Image (cartoon, rainbow, N blue to C red):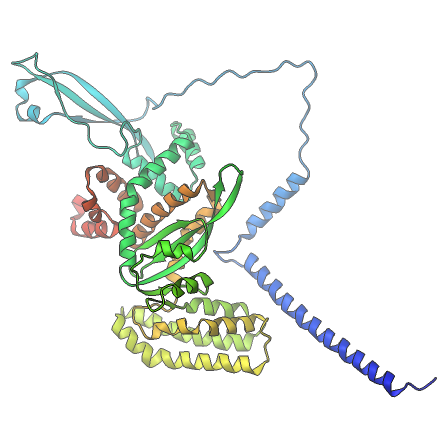
Length: 511
C-alpha cells in the first residue's frame, strides 16, 4: 500500500478538524433546541394559571378528530313534502308571574293636605329589576289628583324619577347583575341569555343585553376617568399589558388588541383598551405632564417611550421576571441557576419582613440600603463572572437569563434608592388575572368599542375588589344614584370614597 504524501495527510487532518468542529457545533445546536423544546413542553403542560390548560388541548384534539370524520347526513327521500315551520308566537315582554313591588309616588301638595284631594286615576311605569336569585317587576305608580274644591283644575302628578335610560326596561339591579356576571363571574352574554330564559322564564336577546352593558359602561365612564386621574397622580405606576382578540367587522375574523393595565400600589387599578402594543399607546395612557417612575418588564416599548421624555421618566425593573428566567434554566444548570435563585429569595425574604412590619417608604429605604444592597451587588458580580467564564453559551437558557438580567440592571437597582418602589411588578400582573380567566370563556370581545367598555368595567370591578367591596352592591347603588348626580359629585361614588362611607355608616343603616 503506497505511503501517503505529507500534503494528503495535512488535507485529511484539516478535513477531520472541520468535521469535528461541525459535529461540535451541531451538538451544541441540538442541546439548545432540546432546552427550548423542554421549556415549551413545561410551559404547555405544567399547572400554571397563565398557560394553556392541558384539558383544552385534549378537547381540541377531540374536535379535530370529529371534524376529520364528520357524521353523514341522511339525504331527504324523494317526493317528501317540504315542511314549513309556523312563525313563533311573540313572547310577553315581562312574565305575569313575576313578583311585583309597587312604589306609590304622590305629589308634594297632596302629601301636605291629602283630605283636599281626590284621586282620579294613575299612570303606571314598569321596570324589570333583579335581586340575586330571582327577577321582579318594579312597578312605579304615580297617582293623579285634582282639588276637591276645584275639580276642573289640571291634575297634578308626581314627576317620574330620573333613570339611566328614558323608557328603559332595565333597572339598576339588573344592570349590576349583568356586569358582575360578565366581568366577575366570566359568563358571556349568550350564557346569561340562556340562564334568564330557561331558569327564570325571562327571554332577553343578547343584543338587548349588549346594549344594556353599553349603557351601564357609558354611565360609569366618569368614575373611570376619576380613577385614571388618581392612578396617575402619585408619580409611580406599574404597567403591564395582555392580549385580547376582538372582531374585525366585515372580515369575519378576529384581530389582536391589548388591555393595558396601570396600577398604583396600595391604590386603584386602571385598564385601558388599545388595538396595538406599540409605544404610542403609552402616550395615551400616561398624561402629558406625568413625571416619575414606571415599573414594567423588559418589553422594548417602555424604553422607547421613556426616550421621548428624557429626564422625566425612569423605568424600574421587575425582579420576578429575573427570577422567572433563571427558573426556566434550573433543569439545565441546577447548581448555577439554583444559587442565583437563592440570592433572589433572600431579597424577597427581606421584603416579606417589611410587609409584615407594615414599613413605610423611609424604613424600607433604610433596610434595603443595609441588607438588600450587599445582596444585589454580590448578585451582579456573580452574573458578570459567570458570563466571563464562557462555560454557558449565550444562546442557552442560563445565558439568556444572564443577558436579560444585565440588560435590565439599571432598572433593577431603583427599588434600592426609593422606598416607594416595589421589588417586582406582581401586583399589576395579579390585576390582569381576571381578564385571563374571562378570555377562556368569551374568547374575544365584539369590537374595538366593546374593548373600551370592558376596560371601564374591569377598572371599577378590580378597584372594588382591591378595597374589599362587593361589586354587585356597589354597582347597584352607584347606578341608582348616578342619574341624580352632577359631574362635581362623581368623586363621592368612586370605590375609594364609597368604601370610606361604608366604614363610617352604622351596620344597621349600611345593610
